[in-house]
Amino acid sequence: MFALVGLATSCSQDDVTELQNNVNNRVTIRVGVETDNMVMKSGTLTRASGALQLDGYSLRYILEVWNDDDVVAYREEKLVTDASQAVDFEFSLPDAGDYNALLWADYITEGATETDGHYTDLYYTTNSVNGLGAVSIIGSAYTVNAGSRDAFFGTSSFTKTAGTAANLGSITLNRPFGRLNIIEKDANLQADLTSMSLSYTVPQTFNTLTGGVSGTYNVVVSDITSFPSAATEKANLFFDYIFTPATGQQLLGEIAIEYRLATATGAFNIPANMPVERNKRTNISGNILTDPDITRLSVEIDDTWTDGDIEKNPQIDDIIQVGSYYYEGGYISSQFTTSLTCMGIIFIVDETGEHGKIVSTDEASKAWSTEKVVTNAKNIDDGMANMVIIQQISGWQTKYPAFAWCANKGTGWYLPAENEMRALGDAMTNINTALNRIPGADNLKTSDEETVAYFTSTEYYQETQRDVDCGSAFMLSTSNSIATNFLKDEIILVRAIKDF
Image 1 (tube, rainbow, N blue to C red):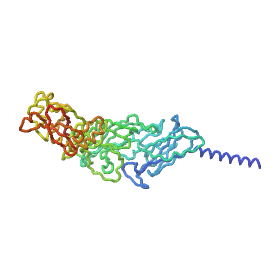
Image 2 (cartoon, one colour):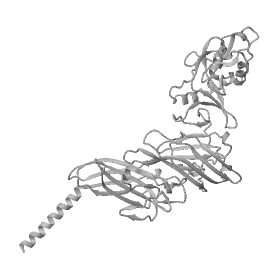
Image 3 (cartoon, rainbow, N blue to C red):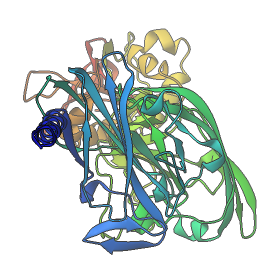
Image 4 (cartoon, helix red, strand yellow):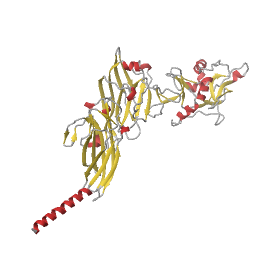
């Protein structure tokens, strides 16, 4: 009797000790994605508990706990049917030490098969030998215009103390992507689009631990026949999710587009070096489905990932406006990026909204001319007309330094006429705001700050000797630019402009 009682008492104590050890070894973590950070509207959507949810897909959460030797100490996957639902992971770590919790969430097919605790991957391989340290694109499943390709990640470093439970609290996951939106500005042409094929390169692998990207995947997507809506997706040709580094920009290679309209076929190449940033949208818009020789692309990086229920103009709002950046190749953006070569700042937009004038980002101090002769360059509206007159003079490159400096910038650059310089003064606030973002750029100087003036290409004209001696100049002001005149051989400021 006593032996039996003693044995029963011994087992009970062992159970208590084991239970206590399990409690002390326990680690808990809550993981979720805020509703506002969920997928863009794409495909058939339903609302579950107020959150955006994709029909036919389940959101899968994966947890990997790595020790300080980068060895996986614990791994678990969980599914949710409500995308707004937070997930709790609770597990045991018997060994004290430093750990990293790696978290990944992506969409997999609803009802996906589970084998040994792993659900079948859909778009990204998550169970390679490096686990979440090398999440890679599954080429055979690559597609565009699919909100189900969205994914999220996060990490949390922690120290597990022996005999003490750990609660890591809540972690909100973010995207490993930037989103590329390609937009046709002519809604009527987009409506005639019947199919499209794409080819370009993107980073292939994402490291959840470091946030880095590596490798190259050659995207080839053929015979696309379903296109997004500009009203809900911003894009109306295609959109894609692209792995991006933690900081800076991912510069893309050339994007080749082949398309078929109801009555014609065509092709268009978006040149390399388009920038994509994590958790932001790169919106590239233009008349892509027209003659590529006359197509101008607008490039904008948008901090807003989703547009909610706001309807957008299907023509896509232009960003061709005073103060926008004009880049080499004819790209226009309201934002400055170092990945493209900025040629100038827009200061005039014509009534069509498609053309205008840009001013150079730099300036120089030059004489109007070294000789005092009448040139008849007297146009007050069109500096190019004055430039043509000067260029007919023998030795003009030496005799007319201000004109030569502008012409040396390349085809189409010229010294502005009086009224073009006046327009620069009117737009000076927006121009200088843009110039301030460009390293090494020269702001327009104003007579409000110091006594300065810019030569124009308009020869000062009066029925006196002064038309021989003088060139027109402007003292710029945000309130009232003042026309004046300087001797042609005086050295004052010069700025170049160009039509686009």
